[in-house]
Image 1 (tube, rainbow, N blue to C red):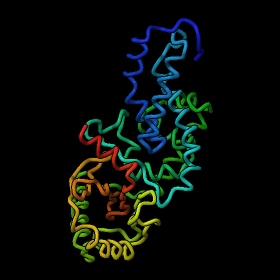
Image 2: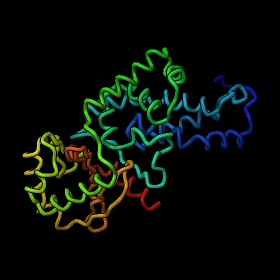
Image 3: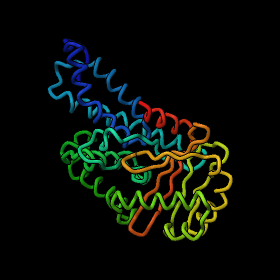
Amino acid sequence: MHTGAHPAPLDRATEDFVSVRPRLFGIAYRILGSAAEAEDVVQEAWVRWQNTDRAAVHEPGAFLTTVTTRLSINLAQSARVRRETYVGPWLPEPVDTAQDPQLGAERAEAVEMAVLLLLEKLNPVERTAYVLREAFDYPYDRIAEILGTSRANARQLVSRARRHLADERRERVDPATHRRLLEVFLSAAQTGDLAVLEEVLTADVVSYADGGGIRGASKIPVVGRPHVSRYLAAFAPRFWPQADTRWVEANGRPAVLVLAGGTALALLSVDVSTDGIDRIMWVMNPAKLFPYVESLTG
């Protein structure tokens, strides 16, 4: 990782970087929960790669992964402080996974909105260890090297993250069931059908509306079947009559883009267990919503 003498030709450096770029973005995005911040990290990794003595680097992919991961951890640590002043619930920035369901990873792990939201409760190092192991299948020795820790501690970090997710999430359903329940929920939410809403929602369901302070977005999560059902029923006549919907994919799951006059109002996604819908996530913050919408049109 020395800088200075005898850099390899820039075209070769570019090839090496481009070949691993999807993986770098996938790592950064899962750690940060923000596509914009992940892009910034990947760009910084590229700058550092250009300024590195590449002749001394035997494995460009390993070097770039280490740089990207450590940059992401540093940014995640400062992001935690910034999110303490965020207005209302914070949700991950959605990404379109239709073209790359695994988002640069070996396995499509830790890319669902609900998983990223739960991982946010872990410290950045724990989250990173989990991402490297579960999504990218890195061996513990390599994770330890990247994090600057021991193999035993790397294993413990992953185990702690797994336990956290297991404690917070019930058994998931297959994609077809997920889609069907979202369809039923959407119809009931549009009509304010309390009976159907109470049938598909779990007793401890939580509804998050990430508006970043915009008018109309609840600034606190709505918790529990009775409260969420009544909230959605009261919300229905004000929100849905002027709205159009479009089925999309976000973070590896079906989602619904809500529009009015061609302008995106919200991205609706849900987390579904064998007991029903236990998390409802509304991304309404324009800073998160519009980049996602633009990605759908290429």
